[in-house]
Length: 131
Image 1 (tube, rainbow, N blue to C red):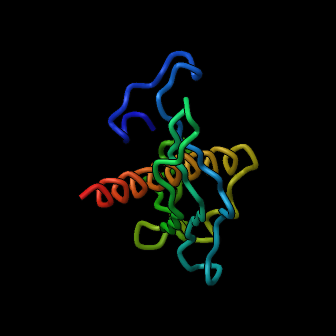
Image 2: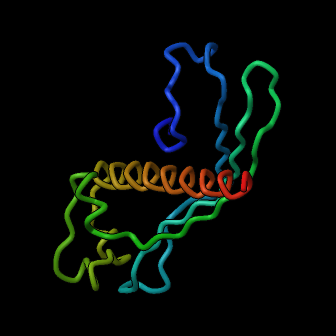
């Protein structure tokens, strides 16, 4: 997160100048039909605070929705082939073939991806607010 905000992470959290608080309201995977593309969604609220004073510097709600691409799953070391993927997008049917450990890795990879996207959108909003 610090890289996205162009900051240097503090070795000691109490020595940090700012903190980012991310509260996830909802997140999950949905698909309109069995062979339709599966989408990962997250609805969250992010707040940037000054550590010493607790003063809120920025706050915003962020909603992201992204098709689950097999390429994203490479990071989770899970592959999709044949009817599991449609137009480079993983289908609900493809997700149903995953083992429990594979699904855990997929959800972790998607959560990391969503957190990165959420923080990037928040950063852009902060920059726009400063103009």
